[in-house]
Image (cartoon, rainbow, N blue to C red; front, top):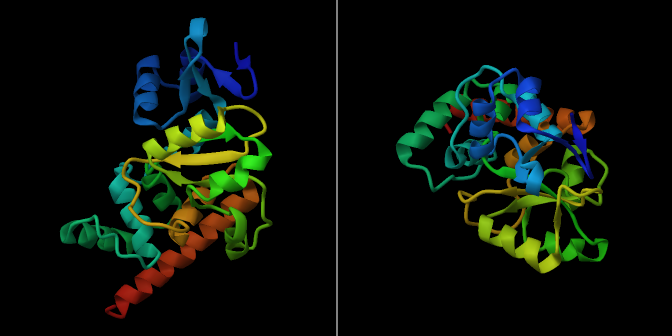
Length: 236
């Protein structure tokens, strides 16, 4: 049966039943980072129910998900960023595809850009954590860009080394309630400082379980894609 701790957790068998797939497929999804899991002593591998629901919602048709560096490239390009880590040929292919993709498909294609981990954090340390990651979604001042209310939850990106440092230094607790830090971890995180580009923030919101955040993210992505196509049509 479903095990409840601070979060709702599932065994591999339960996750397989939820998705209608084999346990071998669940193992592959865990290894690819499509669903979130962790070892729990004698109980073995446990999987967060939220990540299973998230995968079910965004695993529809629309093309094979992009690799991390291609996913970031797509979201950077529609944000007006250069995506310098891509080759000229890769940028050309992405530009051609982005002229025809819609917001829903783009969210599916870019969902493997980072592994999502959620943590409890001491409230007095939240600001310190915020300054050491690249904030995204509707964190802090970014909320006003999406006409959303600011939240105390901190969301952003870090590479694996930084994430491990933050967990150890500030004693972040994985999958413990209440969630205070939503960290997206990627070894292909573009090297830069400051907030994540608007396209990345919008994609994060479009994956949210909150209907208002999801709508704001999809509407912003739709607008960015329309502007991207218009710029291409005008030869820019």
